[in-house]
Length: 69
Image (cartoon, rainbow, N blue to C red; front, side, top):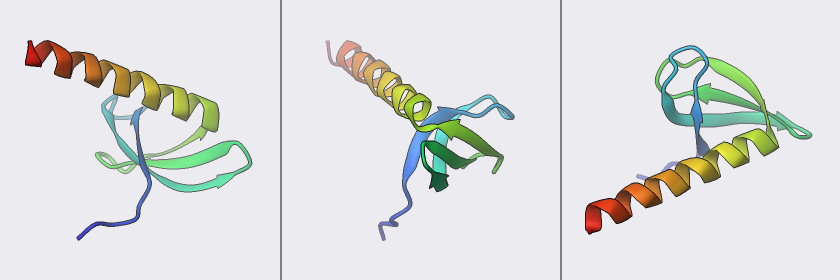
């Protein structure tokens, strides 16, 4: 079963893990997110969240390429 919860990878300021964070709401460019590991809530700007996700995807892509060679 697939849920419709939007998640983005972000570094939690409490547990310090890079984990998926559920987006629980937003107002303008500010997002409320919740760590799926420790359930800590954070407020983050949309641009910061987007840039972090892109960097994480690039790093994952590089790792996958290294493993396939």
